[in-house]
Image 1 (cartoon, rainbow, N blue to C red):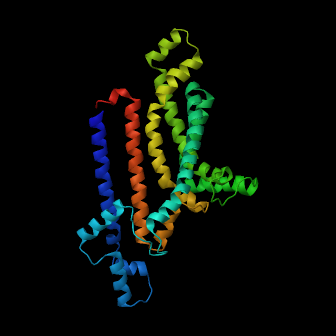
Image 2: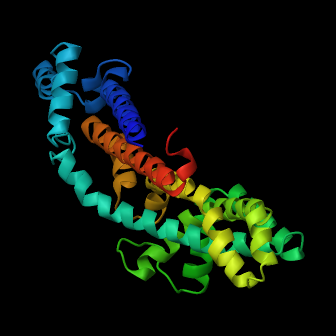
Image 3: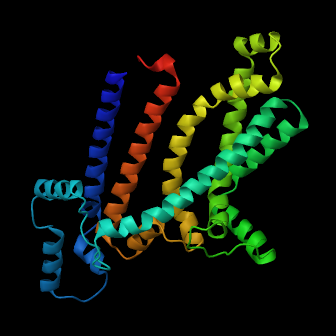
Amino acid sequence: MFNYLVRRLFTSILVLFGISVLVFSVIHLVPGDVTMAILGRQKVSEEKVAELRAQLGLNDPLYVQYGRYISNALQGDLGKSIRTNQSVSEAIAEQLPSTFALAISALSVALAIGGILGLFAALRHGTWFDTLVMGISVSGLSIPTFWMGLLLILFFSVRLKLFPSISNGSSFADLFLPALTLGLPEAAVVARMVRASMLDVLNKEYITTARAKGMPERLVILKHALRNALIPVVTFVGLQMAYLLGGATIVETMFARQGIGRLAVQSIYSRDYPMVQGVVLITAAIYVLINTLTDITYVLLNPKIRLK
């Protein structure tokens, strides 16, 4: 177990190192002079260009620039925004709670709706209900997120006038439509996964033995089948939480919500490269952290792979 944890943490560190190299390279992969890309078509003097290059540290060798970037990043200093002159770390810290609230709400929607539909589809395997759930899940996977959002806005905001189409808070009303937009496609995936996992578990010998002993069907499902069927879902939850953090960009832009996704879009439009670098690095680090915790949790839940 200890060896597995050491290997997993070492792998995560290597991945973070590779990500840091890629993020650092962004500013150097821009075609032409990055300072001119930042300044756009403005007519500026050579002194202004030289000042910006000095501000970004572009006059130093690449290894010096990378070493300085990593050293500052480890201390929580990701530079300053070119557009607002605000600390990148502070800007991201201000936006992260909104994105986390949206991602957690969307994941809750996905697990609640998808879990219930998948469970009952498995228990009614081969019936019209099973076919209906699978049809709905395919439709949910096929509809693009932005189109789903537009349909929900049209129905709940325009027609029923129940929820606002522009939401920037953390109340139920503010999060309902964004969370539903982001969570419904994932609910389709959860439904298919829970159904497949339940069908596999229900055919196991220990389920047959429990039924043969006269155990009530409700206890067989809740105590034996469901508990074991949800083990593969743990991996999915971790991966999807990380995915939702990154996939919140479209939803945040659509509903005019604050968040790191919308911050990244605004920074790209304004050519604010330090901010783009900071958002990508933090998002990737969160993604790696969640995946590492997911793997460790999976090992704890499944003793069969502890010594592998």
